[in-house]
Length: 202
Image (tube, rainbow, N blue to C red; front, side):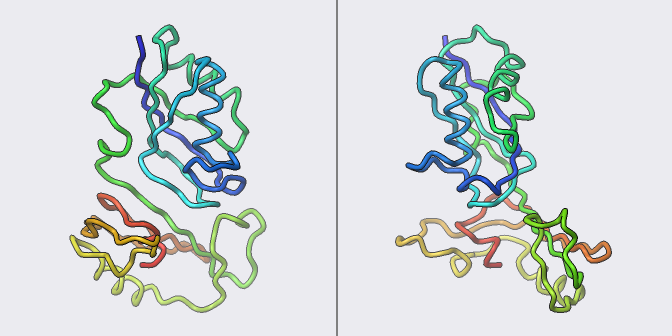
């Protein structure tokens, strides 16, 4: 009998071409599916709560997978799959869920975090993890602008063109918080969902 597993996945996005499976096979989804297939002995599909672009990191992305049998406990699946993954990708938590759970459609919210370094010299350990911005930033102005996006709005103007019209472009942004600590800035979006590249364009 098959079982559905809920996964919480973390990864350094630098070596991957995003989440969604592609023909070259170097995406987060591709790596996870190959590892699960080696253990399950048959192809499996890993469903993510959302798609991330190339180079985007994840601290806790939700996913689920249906494995063809229930002989292994979730903790065994976690250990076995992690042993086959590259070090930049790990399943942090794994648990059994009912078949009506879906990583995408059961999601209640998503959080995107952008980091900016405003120092004249970029600290080496922040390379690839922040946007190095030499222009001065005004915290008050940024917070005033951010407040305009909070709430339920039509974000059609902030959706990247994928060659076809988006269906429903109404989204709710629960919060948009901007923080500064020294030269490091954090911009955090929390909402019920986001259009394609919407957060980047905002």
